[in-house]
Image 1 (tube, one colour):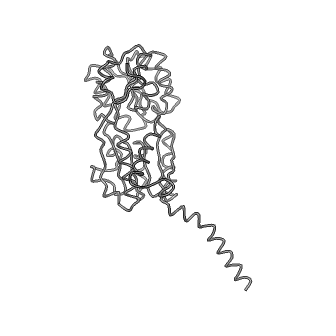
Image 2 (cartoon, rainbow, N blue to C red):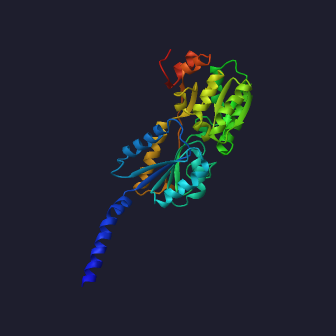
Image 3 (cartoon, rainbow, N blue to C red):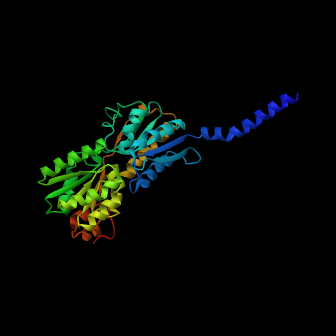
Length: 329
């Protein structure tokens, strides 16, 4: 009799201890995985939260959100994705193309929503917007707002009209970064510019790569890839020292000293991605949700950054820009 009471008491204690864990499991877990911590990444994540809110889902009440980052060390992405699956995530959010590339090979059943990528098809996530891996959907913008990089080159030519040579910093381990390099080189050549590309594999390479381009007397620098973007503070520091303007696909880096950027509408894309996540949490299969292509691109300029390297952003470029860092002249 005593033994029976003891076993019953033990069972009740175990159930009491497991109750909070069960409650946590009952609340859907969203795990956001990013390859690197670009400047401004929180803006994109806030847009995703807004999309969830617009779908009547509140953090803490309707879902739990965890954020993890490889911090530019792409070799750790498989471990981060495995940890998300081990945690029984209801949805994995893949930020940046490098994350999706690994997820498409590794995540077979857990729903994955990507945002805001340049090419989900090159990553193996699908063949078209409607024909894709059954557990994948998301938001993308080809070429990060400029499929062939022609508009990026046109912007550089407008701001630096006497330019004859473009420097490119890229991440050779990232296939999409290599694609961007190649397309930018071709676009530059069509516009009559020579192009010099320098690879960066680690953050320690970034400063020296920038100084190498300074030594080649380039007239402007463009950058692609998670390592390059993670090392942006070193790029802008070295470029300023040799009076070379930096252009970037990221508007957030314009706020930190780049002269100009062409980029997709992050706010639109994030809100759409958030609503996709909500649809999945409410029971819809990702297979039934087509990829969403962001159509709108924007331009950001930083006239003060241009002045700091001896340039002037043309008045018509400033007038047409969606974002002007600092006061409009």
